[in-house]
Image 1 (tube, rainbow, N blue to C red):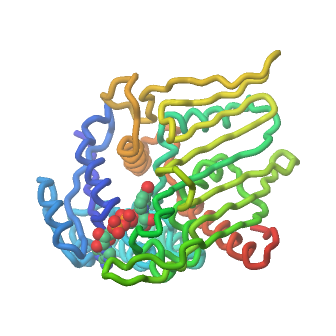
Image 2: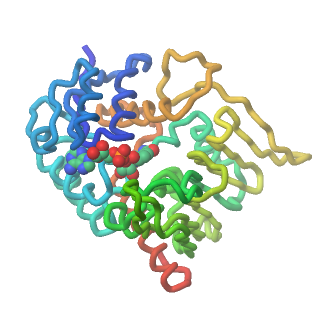
Length: 374
Ligand SMILES: NC(=O)c1ccc[n+]([C@@H]2O[C@H](COP(=O)([O-])OP(=O)(O)OC[C@H]3O[C@@H](n4cnc5c(N)ncnc54)[C@H](O)[C@@H]3O)[C@@H](O)[C@H]2O)c1
């Protein structure tokens, strides 16, 4: 008999439904110790609640998240709501005695992140934060290479997440473009967890940061014939110093909503004097490895489906977003069950707080036009 992890979702929008899709194909995971069941969903919109009616295991559909939290059927809650609601709902999840997979960011700012982390510690519940791209096969290979000790002296690191649809000024406003819902950190809160997860897990904690933040479009159509203010940062470039083995190593983190031509392009590059690796979701099968021997060469490898948690999917097939999202959930369920077995895990509360320390330092750096100690 496998353990059953019974999940409730608060926020059934874009990501809430993506989670439901991951649970619906859970059986593709091979020899996995945990079964998952989506049992309850909360959203404010009737059309979204109706969408979840097609999932036979869902027993509770509600517009009141307190009703979901009161349900003894729910073990784990996935919260995917606008950022200004993260802290209050995460704290209520913990107070209700449930485990939590929090969507990023971990609260709207640093103070909120610290309060959530402290409540998670006090509660003893299993809490992790969402970031799925490191679970792609190409990203896993970059992590392995970075950990292999074969890079020589570390030269530099790039970790970037680029969007482009905001280049269209006629794209209507939504809550992600307004500080009161998205937070003062703007695009850093929206895309930042995705770029810091691997560096922080590898021990690359920025010592200093110089931030360049850009607001480009300050209003957008409100969908009602008028315009609404957009006051969040659109693009953020964080130029960081790492102290590694007595040397200062540059690390550039980029979070962009205005990156020409980039559709959800997440990429990471690690360069050393002896070796390096680069992976981008723009070429989901392609891993680039640098080797310095008698001659220097970049080697292109056509990857297959070597995910951290094996599935029935053929080893030569291509992975995509729904696959890494399922793998992230598998990592959450495995770690919660004590079965991670040394594999890469989801973002911890301490890492989430460190991400916010960096973003807060980024805001200060931009304000003062100076490098700021993190
Ligand atoms: N991991 C990723 O790749 C990824 C991608 C996109 C968004 N996100 C994150 O997921 C979260 C949600 O983003 P989204 O794109 O799904 O947004 P969305 O707007 O599509 O969905 C949010 C949902 O929350 C519901 N909601 C609002 N207030 C609520 C309340 N009090 N109770 C219950 N439901 C409520 C809304 O009705 C909406 O359906 C955010 O934190 C965002 O940063 C993560």
